[in-house]
Image 1: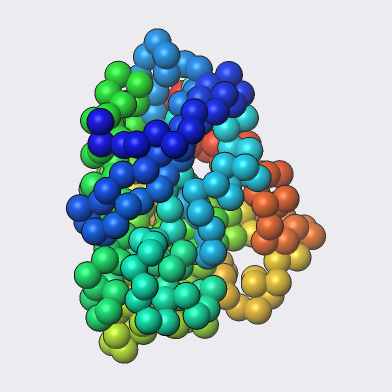
Image 2: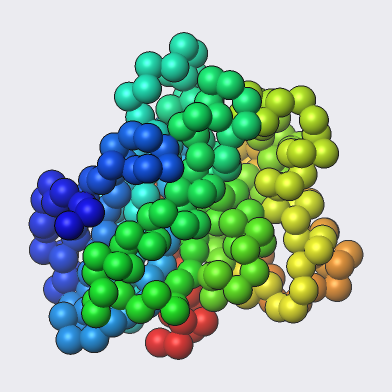
Amino acid sequence: MAFTTKATIASFGGQLLKLSHKSAVTGTDMALNLYLPPQSSTKAVPLLMYLSGLTCTPDNATEKAFLQSSASARGLALLFPDTSPRGLDIPGANDAYDFGEAASFYIDATRAPYAQNYQMESYLTTELPDLVFREFAGKLDPSRLSITGHSMGGHGALSLYLKYPGKYRSVSAFAPIANPSRCPWGEKAFSGYLGDDREEWKKHDATELVKGWKGPLNALIDVGTGDNFYKQGQLLPENFEKAVKDAGIEGLELRYQEGYDHSYFFMATFQHDHVNHAAKFLGL
């Protein structure tokens, strides 16, 4: 067994598994949570991968966003990876909440000292799904995968969806960092992980990536109008929407939710729509 099971928790008729494994890609132990709905006891079900935001672990959304409630009803499994490698003692990696540990931005770093271990794009697109589908064969359907995320994880979901056409059936995001090469969070992360070449940054920016997208987008985005990070210009969903419209791409539903903030109260309110969005494209 590739995974060590830390806990098995009954949840909405299914099981939430708290797992860990040694990653060959990051060179560290990686934590993750996997929710198996009750339907997985008799057939292979599709999988929705959820990417968390800055400072988070796999437990935050598991305990506060309640995606399991909707996933159980639809017969959909959920995968909650961690936000970065941990325990590396890289100088400066724990000095700020928005860079380093728990703030990988879901890319493969190329700049020292992060390049050796911060290979989160490769981890999430290759190693982790391969392991999960192999170890839970018969319970998970490897041909049906979608992706979602919150904040930094919304950036990760959008950018990975756009980088790997056909890998994910759909994408959704809660308050995503939608144009990271043009906001303070993204500028800090990309310069630290990738260096100062802004053309390189564009390869990891959903607003830039979507300009080359072909076909319908199958995307749902929710942003709260009371979100302070939206007001501060960290999220920039309007830039993503403009790029989609300018490229003549269909299939984006961008909703501004009046009064909602950046928190899990916002996420829990609209998670049902995001699970149903994924379920639609996963054939449920």
